[in-house]
Amino acid sequence: IADSNAYGYPTLYIDHCEICHHKVAGLQLDDAWVVGSRLLLYDCGGATIYVPFGGRYTFDHITSANYWRLDHRTTPSVILRNWYESVDGVVPRNLVEATFTNSIIYGNRSEGELLLDGIDGARFEVNMANSVVRGKLWYDVDPRFVDIEANDYHLSDDSPAQGLGYYAEE
Image 1 (cartoon, rainbow, N blue to C red):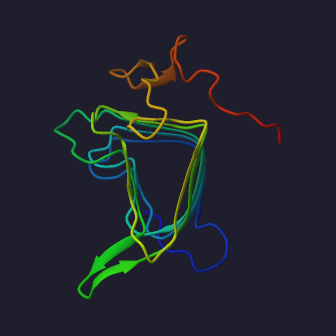
Image 2 (image 1 turned 90 degrees about the vertical axis):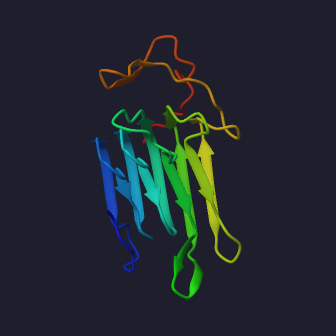
């Protein structure tokens, strides 16, 4: 869980990590500022990335592969919201940025693996680039992982995601 950011710099930098087998969420980001790259998030009972109310997020080269097998999963792998509900009603919170580049958001939920839940009255900026996302609005193709049962989420040689990403030398 990464919580609110009030200091003008990212709450969390996360790079080259594997997050898996969480009953609820792999990453819960509560109005935080997170910069993440080279992440593998898989097999969570709820979301791999859960943003319940706003924040700023930049993800590059992540794979969210949610094939949870312990019971029936009803939630998408990635949930992005710009609001929360309090006793006084719905409270808008800015989702300043949620950018996913060179990423895969896929799993066994046929209804799609990305939920965009924005309301008027707060920013809701979501950007997808060079990414595969299970859901009707995105580039939705099976990425053909090597072996889901063995948790090998490398891309097979014939994967349609091969070569999709953009690489820039730093």
